[in-house]
Length: 229
Image (tube, rainbow, N blue to C red; front, side):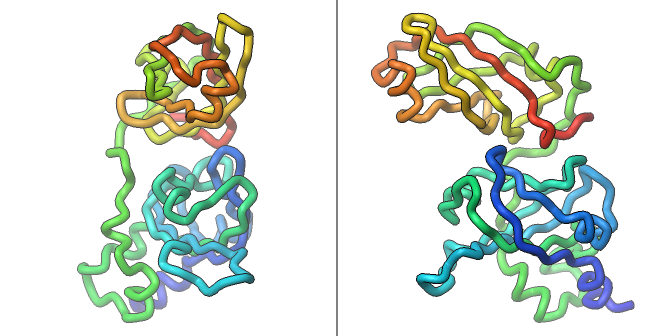
């Protein structure tokens, strides 16, 4: 079977919505079509599906590499969400293909049809390098932390390891200002340095709109969408 036919036979096409955890559901039929194991890499073409009022623009399309989670979902990275201006509940169309079925735009006899679909996919590598996921000991942890003036909070390695988290995971987190008792429930992505960032509107709600590195109380819960080691 040719590279093109083999790749096309394992492509999954569907429409879904961006979840509150920044993951997108994959139908059971598409999971079967992909024929890959959980946590194996796949290439994603994501296109906005709610553009009835205007034509498709370059910003409405993105390609990147990710993995299939055990929850039959795949992650939509922050840079993709920002580029496509995606919010929770937005409708998207996805095209998925196992990474090993499509070795790369510069490797082998890749047909024009596939080349046009995945243009620039090699430039959209994951924001974070691969790292080993620690074994999970608990689904929830609470601790005190110092919030930087930028809204960043560091999750120490102790809690990252206990929760089985790595950079790029999106967690459910509650941040509480102990001074006034205000608390905010958010879904935040773990970035470089194991930091999450509380945005300005949430800091204002917490009474920390002009912080001077205040101490906050933090509760982290691991959503089902985050895979285990």
